[in-house]
Image 1 (cartoon, rainbow, N blue to C red):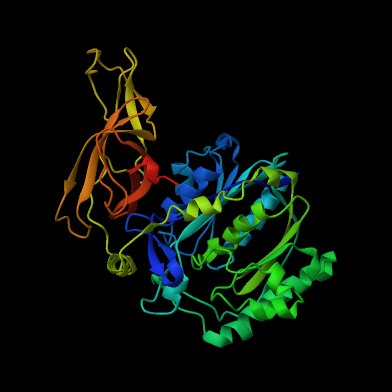
Image 2: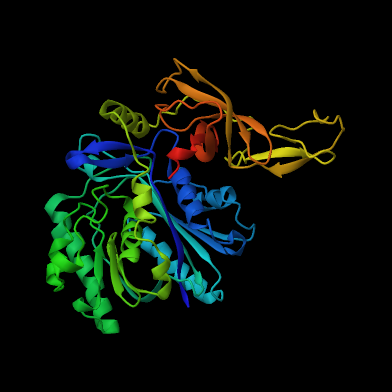
Length: 458
């Protein structure tokens, strides 16, 4: 049985307050599509054998490159096998469901071999527009493959192509232009969504009462109500009220976030209709499998939600403006720059005595052996040996926290703390290293790891 084997969600550390006590997750200057995608994929693969993954499909409309594979870079950072197939899905808000459908097809043709699907988005609506309050940054990952632990299987799907009147972003732009008001709902969204759902009903014999939940991705937050009524759905029962607790719209990741929300709230055998829009629509029917019983209701969605930290309104607006203008943060560079854009978390171990260092060495400082250094993967957790704060760093809120961390498994390295530095570490605190965007080089962004207190880790 080929289905969804695991899922993972990642939200930025910071958020902006909204009416009603809600928060909109906003990517910091050192967070982007890659960092969120890797975080979601790491959580998805936490209990999986990543050496079996045969393909990575990454969906986004806000990738860091115009001509370079975002999926290939993510696969490199995730340390997936060298023969993994990587594909970028972009150009439409329904790229996430397109990637999910392609993953099911690929898994079916490869004997159920696992395929990793990631949808990640860092969207920048025009400042001051209503969409600036509606959009958020997020990533979600699903592992598709064959296994008895599947929590959901794809039963049917249908797609249509429609009018291009929705949100758009021209090449080179960083801000999302809002949808064309009422014209978007009546002329673009409603006809495409209704046509895809009706086509699926006709082809496969479904009726509105067949589904526990109907999840409609609505870029403006309310245009899904009209087609839901036209389709004969029970709006009060089948359409969950504000399922994502007012986070905002997450672009290509949004329909898959809705699916991640619905899965743990269904019983085995119940079906969910997922509809996403993007110059047309995709309609998918997923049936819950026995593995859904192992998915806890509070995981993974609510865990990710609680990771959003409050940011002062002024600072949130400042970050929004800097990011939309493409201003790079001034932060310490990694020890070594690599052309592929990623500085791996690797050190060196002495073959004679086993001493581990984060930097290369010709003579082992522990035993004096020469030419004994061999490459070694460094641990992702450790404790603070010492730390300091830098004030007056251009483009960054003070203080900019740096720490020397003793890593589990050996090695000591200097790292920057992730986040705005509101929480000062103490010597002996446990930390985890998380992927962040360090700086922009002439060849593009450079990614490496920063430290975060373990108690802050979602």
